Length: 384
Ligand SMILES: CC(C)(COP(=O)(O)OP(=O)(O)OC[C@H]1O[C@@H](n2cnc3c(N)ncnc32)[C@H](O)[C@@H]1OP(=O)(O)O)[C@@H](O)C(=O)NCCC(=O)NCCS
Image (cartoon, rainbow, N blue to C red; front, top):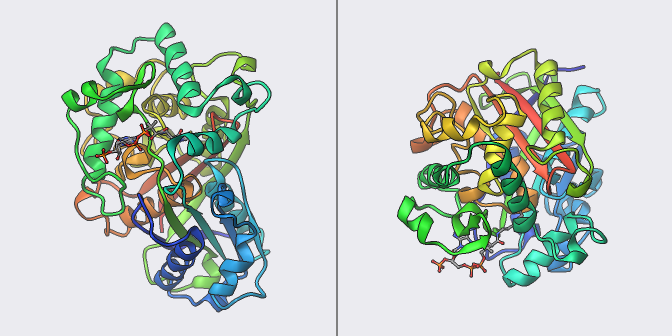
């Protein structure tokens, strides 16, 4: 396999976009290519994700994006894997570059949903669950993740303020992030006074519906030779799957796809959790951050809550988790999320993360989940 690098990265501010997903995708793609010191003509292949293109009556985004970039002849493909769509795109790009099938691949994720009301957006998102067995019977993502939180709470200690601490930490990080949807801190009082969405979740346990776009350029070390930024070396790129239906899983104390992805990624990278400096994990709901930390082997089962309360996962803690603000507060424009996690690693490793910079940036891990864990991506990066 060829050594594979991330050589350029860009994202816009998540939240509400005036432009379409297609326009935003083209703009961030050009920024990422420019930051890589390349031109669109260097791109051999484009993977684009836009899971809810139906909200803008637009599919087949790849050739439209490549046409906007002036490279209509370049092959493209739309990758859909629910909330893990663009990290699945990164994995495909890795396979192409590491395997020698392409020298430089563009990976883009974009989503625009803010023009939909909450009910419509919720019903679109619910298409990521199993329609006959889950969605048709009223399940929504807040409800499904609340079920995971309840199961966890029945089996392991989860004092009431633990989930609040995840939200407070991630809002504090997002307050320092100019790309974030919510650039404001919240207090315990604000959290406790917010409405219940799906017990035990309150408003601040949930990620919002966000618009956003993000892009990265994945390239072979031998093709780039003299990078214009500090490249990220892709030390591991792993995709896994699992049973979609929660009622068919042996337990609900974590996500089987995350556990397996973590094991395989650490094995591929030749590293252990202790050797990771910081991470971006899939915190679509507060419980999901705790499950991820345990599934990936950073804490034993039942121990991530206490570590969070002790400040270990804070930006200045022993293991900074979601310095970007995470899905919870940076926002979750579904298809843009997986690549945006890598943009955060790129900015941290290049020293351009500004006020939200973490202390150690030699190694990082990103973890991106599709829906309730039917699919999962884990990537490990080393500073190049
Ligand atoms: C939590 C949720 C139900 C709130 O929706 P809502 O009640 O319709 O909220 P609104 O859009 O009317 O917003 C009301 C206020 O709350 C804020 N808000 C909305 N969602 C928020 C969130 N998740 N966290 C913090 N604040 C939020 C809005 O900015 C707005 O603030 P303002 O009054 O200061 O302008 C919705 O954001 C949601 O369903 N989130 C989960 C999305 C999801 O399932 N994603 C997939 C994950 S797998």
